[in-house]
Length: 144
Picture 1 (cartoon, rainbow, N blue to C red):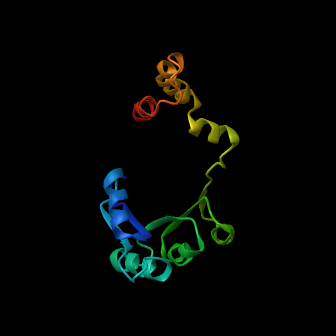
Picture 2 (cartoon, one colour):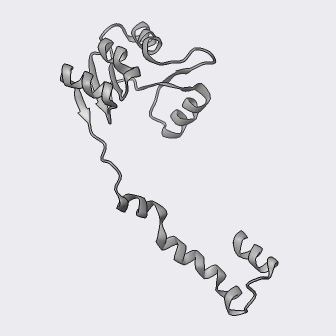
Picture 3 (cartoon, helix red, strand yellow):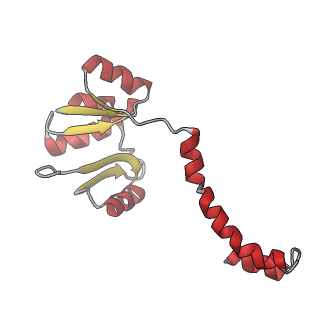
């Protein structure tokens, strides 16, 4: 990051892009979709070239919407590419960042089963007092 301006250039609507940029705190500038002007493909390329010059920026992207931007960039980094970007990368020898495919283990970990067991302790008083059908007791457990 040192010595470079990091820009979030995305087809996402501006309000979401600004929120993402604010949350991450690493971007100096945001180029995003404004109303009817979708910041993808040629429009994104034109905005970046206008700001940094042809070949004056590095670009990381992943889809067919990024191909025109890849062509205008000094260097292209293809991240988890769709088939169009993968084909472009193969023909241009650009750097690729592979993202591992999620496995069943990944999904099980995301479910956080160990947290379920802790949360089940909330229902122990209801079960031990045989208040299974007491709406107030059920509601208290849900709120906890």
